[in-house]
Structures are given as structure tokens and as C-alpha cells.
Image (cartoon, rainbow, N blue to C red):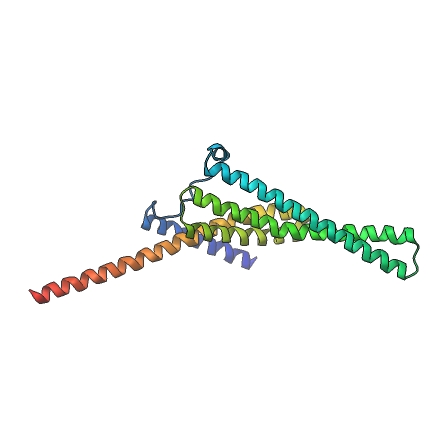
Length: 218
């Protein structure tokens, strides 16, 4: 409970600092994807939006194919090993096959969950990267946001699955993805604000040195 309160407090403080940094650098230099979004309508712009949507679906189909192939291979290997082990113990063929199928199905379920833990965050992260660039964000913003989404989705999914299994994984990964992306944008805005302050400090320092030289020469 104490750790959760500390985490919530840290997020609120970071959000406040990020908002002040956005006001400091101005709307043009702050993160674009915080206020703008890629919508379903953009898929029909017959340009980069359409290409992005098509690529997203192709990537999802390809990943689903990889997952299905991986799960099928794991199931067959686990079933074969279990059948051979039972036969070596003197069990009947019918019993060995039945037991092997149960072992194979359990192994396939674990393999499917492991694949989802990897592929889900990857798709979310890649899409946030594309969305940020599409709406006019910088490459740095896209990278920071996508990394935040990747970590948030993965961690949220693991935490959620530990509480309510597959439903918890689904909700946790979605919520974690959103929170992670937002934290990434906050860090990007804070970084922009710090960079702006450093540049402002250097400019004032240079102006002060120039004024000093003018006074000395006069």
C-alpha cells in the first residue's frame, strides 16, 4: 500500500512538472501525441495513414501465424515426450496417449500466454511509434513514447495476469500500455523543458559577457 501511494505521488508530481515544462517551451515544441490522436478515419486518407493501417494488420496476421506455429510445435513435442515417457514406464498405449495429450495441451497453453506477453506489447509499442510520427511528433518523442508503452504493457499484463489470469492480463496490458505511453510523454516534455532552460541559461550568460565587453571597451 505504501509503495502504491509513493508511485501515485511520483506520477502526479511528474505530471505537474511535465505540464509546466509544456507551458515553458510552448505548444509547438512540446509533445504532439498528448493532445492529438490517429483515428480510424485516418486509415482512409489514401496516404501514410492507409499504409500504416494495412501494415499493422499484416504484422498482426504474421505474428498470429508465428504464435500458432510455435504453439503447435510445443504441443507436439510435449505430447510426444509424455507418451514416450509413459510407455517407458510400462503404461498402456491408450493411457499414454491420453496423458500425453493433456500434457501437450497444458504446454501449448503456457506457450500461447508467453507469446502474448511478447507480441502484445510489441504491437502496441510499434503502433504508438507510428502514430506519433504520423501526427507530426519528433523521432525522439516517438521513441520515448513507444518504449514507455512497451514497458507499461508488459508489466501491466504480468501484474494483471497474476490477479485474475487472462482477463487480468488483457486489462492490465491495456491499462499499462496507456500509462506507460503517458509517462513516456511526460518524460519527453520534462526533457524538453530542461533543455530549454539550459539553452536559456547559456544565452543569458553569453549576453552578459557581451555586455561586459562593451562596457569595458567604452
